[in-house]
Structures are given as C-alpha cells and as structure tokens.
Image (tube, rainbow, N blue to C red):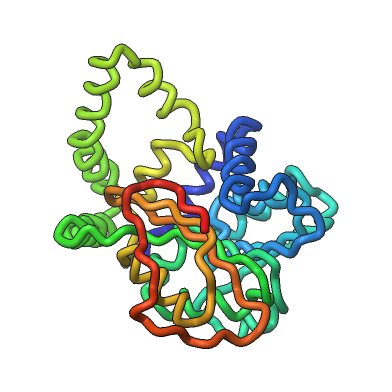
Length: 288
C-alpha cells in the first residue's frame, strides 16, 4: 500500500494561506454554503488535513481520521499550528472499513471523503460504511476515480509496479511516467503564450482544491490500492439507499468524479429503476 502520509508530510511544509483559501472556496462551492457554523463535519481519510482545516475555519466542528499514521500526524500538525487548543477539532487514527469505529463516532451533518475510498482495497464496502455516521438530512461529499476502461487498467499496473520497486528506483520511475505527460502540458502552455501558468502550477498551488501539482502526481502514480467507478455507478449505488444527488462534477479523463448527496430525513421508498434520471458526464456542475 502506498504511503500517502509521507507524501502529505512534504506537502504540509509548503502549506500557505493561498492553498487554504482555495480549499475553503472549493468546500463552499460544493456545499453551496458560505459558512458551516455549528455543523458537524467528518473528514474520512483526512490526508494532509487541509480539508479538515478549511471546514474548521468555516466554522464547523470537525472530526478527522485516517488509516495512515503519517497522515494522522499531518492533520494533527495542522491542528497544532492553527487550532492549538483543539477547540471544535478532533484528530485520530481510524479506518473507513471499520464499521464499529464509524458507529462509535455518532452522526455528522457533513461526511467528507474526497479521493479516499477508492484506495481502501474495498471501495464499495467503504462507500457503504460512509453512510453509517451520516445524520438524517446530512450531506455526503465523495470523490471517486473515473472508470476509463483500458486506461484505468493500465494505470493500475503502473501503480502496482511503483509500489513493488525498491525505494531508490521509485523516483526515476515516477519521473519517467510524469515526463511523457508534462512535456505535452508544457508545450501547450508555451504555444498559448502562457508559460507562467505552467511554472506556477508546479511552484504554486491548484486554484481549485489548494493542492500541489508535484504532490498530486506522486500521489497519483503511487496511489495503490486503486479502484474506479463510472459516475452512474456511484449515483445508482446511493440512489438505491435513498440518497438524493445534489451536486455532480464529472471528469472527461482519469480524475475524480465528485458528488454531493443528501440523506433522507426518513426511510426512503425505493423507486422504479426505470425512472432514474440520466447522469450527465460532460464535466459540468449539476445542481438538482
């Protein structure tokens, strides 16, 4: 299994206000809310702790957990740096596959699992478990890698090889993989007279979620276990459990499809599958 936390430890050292603000904007956009005051926010697989920090700064009461001890340490470091008294923010070790642990946490208004559950080795069980702490009427935010068929299977092999290599060989292997993609990206920026945008993406941050291009690449190449799903698969999975799709952002490539679902306030009645609305896959944001 890839050591996600070690990668995030390097990222956390570069964390600045711009990255934090970008993640706050992302959460506000996905949840369609300017503030989260008084809401309980569960961050499943908190990783660097950046999403937890953004939710805390927006006023939420945050509970963060991760399976990787190094990721727990990253989140705890952000808590120490920005919230030294620990008010409204708990950080601990836990697993998305541990149903008993999730039951012990109580219920949350927002359950957030961005780019996490497909790395558990049992994605569909993790998606099911994410409902355990979701309060009636609460919102579930998940992001799952898009199923690109053969391309996804090729990337699975790339990731598996990375994790079987001895440590000294991983960096040149990752560099070789990155070079083929980044050469094209750099050329496009030069041809469109925007080379500064490309440089900024490496030394700066991703204006969408506050992530770093370099650490996203390492996370992507090394990220194993690795599972994927079509957007309609995730939609149908939660529809059958009574949830309503509120927001959807799809990707045309190998990135994550992002979903916001709302839990029913009472037990749902299963509808006729034939009445299921079509799920768009054009990369647009859908509000229902």
